[in-house]
Length: 103
Image (cartoon, rainbow, N blue to C red):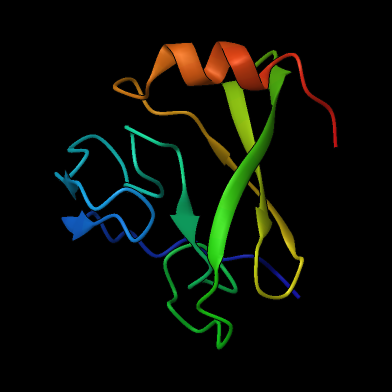
């Protein structure tokens, strides 16, 4: 199956920390910049077709030569692993802490 990207950049309230998360502006917002948690809502980026709807907890960070920091998430409900590029306004202290962990 080919992955498709549907651009959806919207505000949301983080279900982990409760903070209001603004639109990213230059691409799609995928996770909370404060606590780095996300929600398992997509099968393909932006499609909102995932039935799980669990919380994606950040478990580590990978460094990609082209994308920079890539956050690795694990769904607390179904165990799925997902990855997403870090955003410019993400909490760098949390990213640095996650960079020492492996999954």
